[in-house]
Each structure stands twice: as C-alpha cells, then as structure tokens.
Image 1 (tube, rainbow, N blue to C red):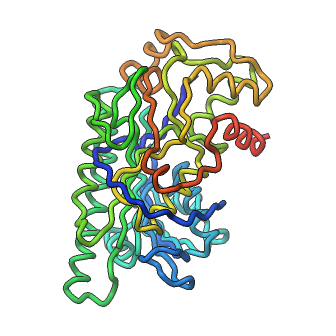
Image 2 (tube, rainbow, N blue to C red):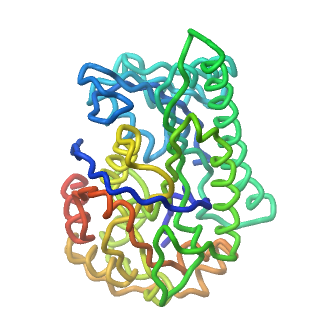
Amino acid sequence: MAIRVLFPSSSSSSSSFSTAQPTRRTSRQRRGFCCFCSSSTTSSDEVSSSSSMMTVSITGATGFIGRRLVDKLLSEDHKVCVLTRSTSKNKASSVFPASRYPGVTIADKEGDWERCIRDSTGVVNLAGMPISTRWSPEVKKEILQSRVNVTSKVVDHINTSTSASSNGNVNGNGPSVFVSATAVGYYGTSETDSFDESSPSGNDYLAHVCREWEGRARQVKQEHVRLVLIRIGVVLGKDGGALAKMIPLFMMFAGGPLGTGTQWFSWIHVDDLVDLIYESLRNPAYTGVINGTAPNPVRLSELCDRLGQVVGRPSWLPVPGLAIKALLGEGATVVLDGQKVLPARATHLGFSYRYPYVRDALKAIIAKQL
C-alpha cells in the first residue's frame, strides 16, 4: 500500500500572531501549473464591498486541491483565470472545459501569466510534483525544482506588477495577497515531539525542500503584498490524496498500517484546507506561516482502525517497513516517518473546522464515495 502525501511540502517561515477574529464562511502531480483569476465577496479590508470580487491567480489548479479551490471560488461567484504551461494546456482544458466552466480562462503563455497576475487581487501557489515515489538523484532534483522554479516565476510576476502599479500603471493594481503552499515536511519527523508554527525546521531532505520553497516565496515584496505560507499536512478527500489508494485495499480486506503504525499522521480534510486558503485570501488577519492541518492529529494505526470501522473492513494487514523501503528507497520516509503538527495559528485566528476529528472526516468522505 502506498500513501500519496500532497507535498505542498517545503517551507521555511516564521509565524506572526494576530488577535483579529475572522468571520468564517463555510463552503462548499507530475502536476500542471495553473493560475486562476477569481472574484468574490469578502468582509476583509482588501475587498471591502459586498459587491466586490477577488481576482485570484493560482498555480497547480488541475491538482487535487486546486480543482476544489476553483470550484469554491466559482461557487462564490468569482472569476478564475487558469495559468498553465503550454505542455499542460490540453490537460487544463479537459479539467476545466469551457462548457462547464464559463468563468475560467486558461492561459499558457508568458505574457498571459504576467497579465493574469497583474490583474489579480490575490495569487495562490500550489505547484509541485508528487513525492511519494522512489527518490533517484534526478527525482530529488525535480521535486525541489518543480516547487522553487514555479514559485520564483510567480514571485517575479507579482513583484513586477506591484512595481508597475506604484509607478502609475493603470492596467492593473497587482495582487495584494500571495498564498503559497508548503508542507509539514518543514519540521522534519518525530514520534515524540509536537510542532507548531514557531518550531524550527528539521534537517532531512524534505525539510530542506520546504525551506528553499518558502525562501523563494518570501522574496515577494511584502511591503506591498501580504504573504501567507500554508504548511499542508496529508490531505484527505474522495477524489485523491492518501485515501484514494487506501480505500480500495480496505475494501479487499487488505488494509492496515504501514510500518509500525506508530508514526504521527497530521491530516486535514480537503474542504477544510480549501476554506483555509479561501479565508487566507480574503482576511488580512491571516499572515505569515499557518499550518494546514486538523487540530487532532492521530497515529497511523488509529487512522487505519478508524477507516476500517467506517468501511466495515478490518485493519489487520500491516505492510512491513522493509517492503516499503524496498519499493520506494529513500522516498519511504514519506509514509514510514511522520510528525505531530498542531495548527496553533489557525486556532488562534478562530478558524472553524468542519472536520476536527478524523473519524468524522472519514465518514463524510466515504459517504460521498459510496
């Protein structure tokens, strides 16, 4: 069994606490890089009028998280501009066909990226290749570069647009907020320690990737743009993520924990993550590093027990760690090691989770799946 961890994973940043309490609205890989422009009503200072719309440029929109974010933005009557690589334009067009997504524009050329970002009120960066694979030197290089290169490109466009705006450009004001994904891999791994946004970075490969990833995002001109770095945990949902590979095994009575099962599993339901990103776009109290995890992480053995209960199948067939290492090599660390990450910032800001407990999250996901 293999668990695919969505690795927004790389980041390095410090947290900045705010006492402002947001008014929360519920709502409803290799990956193409997409940029969306979206508009929406909000109570924040950045979009003060109920008739105003956000324009959000998003990379990675064709991925598991990105697709749900686009749906959320459109459901709130926002426009969306999808920026993708020219080699991925066909994929973006198939994910967002014009007949079903009339509010989405797909752009694949450099000038279109520049235009889209310049005319946006916010940018969301979700790009990065999957990490649950065997790590050859070439793959490790690409895991890093797929995150760093796209983030650098987005930051350059943001900085150019804000500079043009300050120099009297009338074609666009440039974005006021940049939400960039990173991952809980920033903290390294531990079976005993807990981590929040103030914790230092780890010293393994994924922690290095995260620091580089976040470092590029921090090059945005923060005197003009509010920066939010969301360190995302394992994302649970019916259309992808870890559960997409786990559920079929359980249905065949072949489900069970990976390795010892004692590793921590810092998870979040995809709907909560999308809401967190959305709130980060519209609420100026959200700034700095925010852990994108649920408030109640579990050991992997507990997750498998809960999943077995929900689907009515036993969690009785553990997969030995040696077998996973033989399959994934160094990449086995993604599923054999974990960290207990707590969302101190989101809790402090008053973010309301739909699914704070893994059993409720699994019930909701399985109900949609069956």
